[in-house]
Amino acid sequence: MLDHYRMFADYNRWANRHVYDAAGDLSDAHYRENKGAFFGSLHATLNHILAADRIWMKRFTGTGDAPSRLDTILFDTFTGLSAARAEEDERIAAWIAGLSEDDLAGRFTYTPVSNPLPVTQRLAPTLTHVFNHQTHHRGQCHMTLTALGAQSLALDMSYFLRAPEYRHYAD
Image (tube, rainbow, N blue to C red; front, top):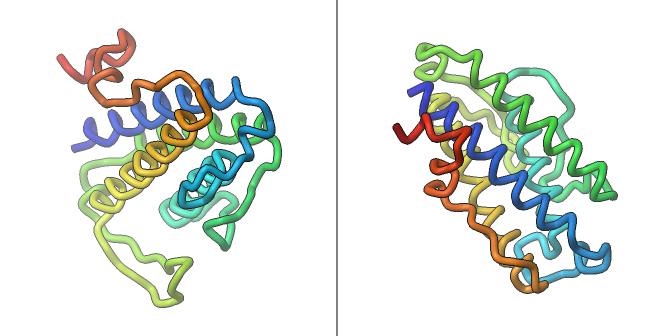
């Protein structure tokens, strides 16, 4: 099971890099334009993904800064947000690399942002949720980029598995 989550951490980093590369080609006005995604603009959606990851990593590790709201704008500049995203992706991958099968089977308790009642659940399905959440919102980013006229992105897992540096997951 560990290899499964290591693959998701690598895929997450790879897909985020592609989204940020495409977003970096936009004008600031287009980057901030509300295109109807759940959080409106690409700027707000990318901030949300990072905010959610920081919230989850704080829950998992007990360390790091985590906002108290899911719509927090952590970085107003694309450059700052992009650097923070890359750093968080490395943090996620390093943390997962240090997990054991026992850790994955274990339980943890956290308090949701949206409801102050503690929740206890197993780690493995929660990690699946974290990576699924990213994929969900990256899909919104892809829609936003497409609506803004950016070149279409190939973010499917199958493309990731064909990349030379990640082919070992498919072998």
